[in-house]
Image (cartoon, rainbow, N blue to C red; front, side, top):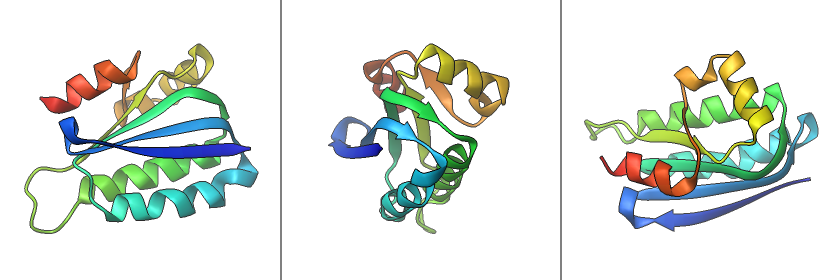
Length: 121
């Protein structure tokens, strides 16, 4: 089962989204429902904290790519796009993200504090 917790992060004018459990095919619709309103809120920065995520399927990765697209689009009057980064992914998930070249879309960080620091700049 997939759990998701959202915490505001004023330092980046955004949020930290902590995913835990298993992001499986069966959870993809629920993940999309949970993330859609977050993208609509147009956060400036988003850290996806994968520290408690055990597995993520390609369908759920697709949901995250769509979420990233929504965050980057932001409100029509903003000139600087939002950013979405991934922190604390397990070695296996990190390898999968790099193998599929998703590290070209999502910057990968070893921990949340590094990700937050990078989004401040």
